[in-house]
Length: 555
Image 1 (cartoon, rainbow, N blue to C red):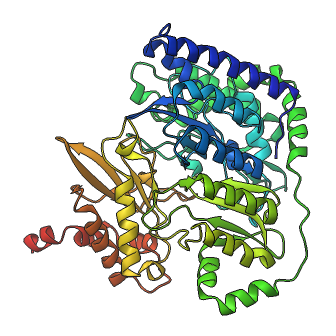
Image 2: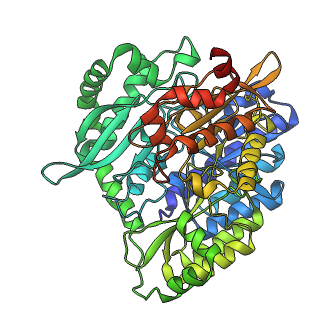
């Protein structure tokens, strides 16, 4: 993991000192809320429905046990004993007092954490594959690149007040676990035909009210050109992007209006100027960063204790089947800890649970954790012989739910329970769907099925790319939930297709039950997933499952 140096420490201390003075001026009344707003947004502080909300960055989703312990401390000391992990690999505290926020930021700085650029029209927290550094299909660990981009973008003078926010993701694996094509800019580590490692660059992806799939602007970028090329892209967009309408100010609109070829030409022209300013210094910094991401020393013990536990404990075996993924080191696995216990709020973790996860990471995962965009926690390096002990510790903390990738492993934004922008509730809908299918005992039979819920058109719940997407809207003061089908968040990304009229709050769970029941009746067999069945059959039969009365009337 990257460890701050003297420059990092001094920069963050000065930044926090400045914000402390700004908070004091707001509390005293010297600053109005309107005057304070741009200052707080630069430091990750929002004003939500009920209170201020502090959004803390977890750069590229990586945490140490000490950092997770510190997040637990913040939850206990300055919030209500929990935190909410988001789809941007951040954690949000929903109830801090304004006067306490400077102390929270100082406490974060002590463990190399901050809240800078988690809001505002700037380059946001850089996200990465949550299996980074561990995945069996990884060409190269993407985190050094993500850290390089984080350092370059932090307080970049040209990019602090752009037309809109700008989101960057990095992946080094064959499979896309990062939703690359839904980002303003994505970096995909690839191998050329001559066996050279470089980068494929995509731009113009995004969800929200105008969902678009990102386009490739450069098929293979040499490593030495990465940072100059990214700066050229952001600089060009910052200059030519729209500012007359905030809904059309994202780079996806610029790409759509001007075309990827025109954008590419302007970027290549800008690159000639930008490359000279870097003069290779970024590669020196990258080499220094890479030293912080050396692989752990992996053990070569036997796995008999894991095999025995699978044989005698069906609950452990069920958890292992659902929540474990292949690791690049023999004898190791990647363990996903579900924060989606049936009936709980997706993405929430109590301070006690955070401390349990920190302790497990210290003892069994080489002191590393990851946060996924799916709002779960990852133990990236667990030896199979340690899994029975890991499972017992998780079970005692209520963190042993065996549902990763299943219908109750729902992505959901905070919705109208917290967010000032939301037009409908998300959390209760997610809770009710999870509980309903737990009661029906159908999850294992259903198999892989991604449900994603957003409480407004901004799509923080990624509903557009859910196999089943649910969008909550306000219809004349009444919550109404639209359903989209066939979305895909992988490298084969697709925007889901709207099924038809929306459903009332008290109808949406029954509608999902009809939909999934219909899928089970038409699939070719247990091996055919919901998404595969949808692609084979198209919208029509699934629409009939959702709207049986309309089907009957048409007949």
